[in-house]
Length: 175
Image 1 (cartoon, helix red, strand yellow):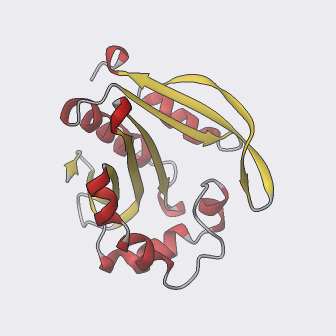
Image 2 (cartoon, rainbow, N blue to C red; image 1 turned 60 degrees about the vertical axis):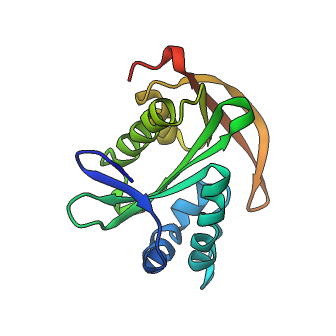
């Protein structure tokens, strides 16, 4: 568990599944993430949550982003490690009702701190769809540098997507 002034990042539980389906099921969320389907199928949230325990053992951590006040689900953030290279990728989604409130920045900053201070990783990187500049602003706010663009790097809903790549290494991190 990771805490910030407004958030608690914790493991998902089966009880989170209805909120995951409701929040991740918004077309705007699916449009800006690689792996979230639309429409969001019944049972998918439960299946997804059921994969987390095994993933945690491999070093892939997915946290529920919840409010510190009432533990209500805001979104998800993951840290997907490549231990042989001392690096990890951050990925996240925020439910539409919570956009523009700084929750992604607060959660990503806390996960970045966890990656460098607790896990002793050397490099953290992230990618976002070029059509989602708000995600790039989150990455810039937590100190990541724009490292480049990858044209037609991913395919979502039959469309080739350009992505922006950001990264930060331990020496550049100010804490």
